[in-house]
Length: 242
Ligand SMILES: [Zn+2]
Image 1 (cartoon, rainbow, N blue to C red):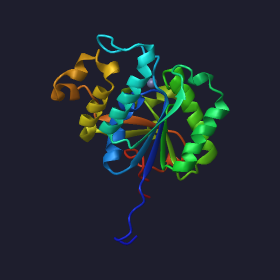
Image 2 (cartoon, rainbow, N blue to C red):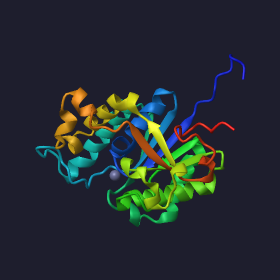
Image 3 (cartoon, helix red, strand yellow):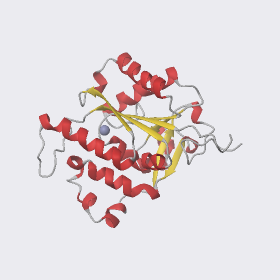
Image 4 (cartoon, protein in one colour):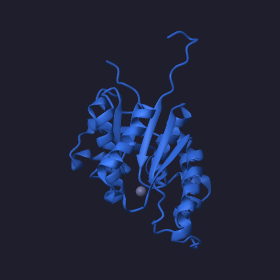
């Protein structure tokens, strides 16, 4: 490629269940890739209106919650550098009851239109919440239908547990470890954007230098398809040399 040609923009699609999944689980990684110029699209299946936390002291109710959490998610996206946000308008806590084929087709459409190099979602068994598992399962099925092996699918994980992937039937070579130490300020800002969820967590509101110490320096992802095989375990986009 000559210097005059512009490199094509890399794209990442994240398909999650609730506002805050993106920030709490992999906010550092999203901020890192956004800062490197990757175009990031986030799909949130629901608006999280059934969340148990309603502010501290509580100032939301079931009626006002969806709009509040949508706004918070928009602010979190700004903090992380996520450019595009879409909702599937599914009612919170009901993702598992949506007809699977319809859900898969909607996600398929997104993958086809966007053509992202990387797709992130939940593992269908290790998601930790029925909505997470359901959206992960549908996204995995959609990815397998439309994406070729030049694309990579990853499952987000809950951090430190992936220090021992054998416990979940995976090996160390399935675990991607992303260094997010330079992006923890953005991650903290996204936590604070999800105010009604984090107000009760005192550490989030400590002075920055103290709050930042609560974050790990790395986020962990599981390989979701064979297209991710020949990849550098420290970069979701980069193919390993040789
Ligand atoms: Zn969630």
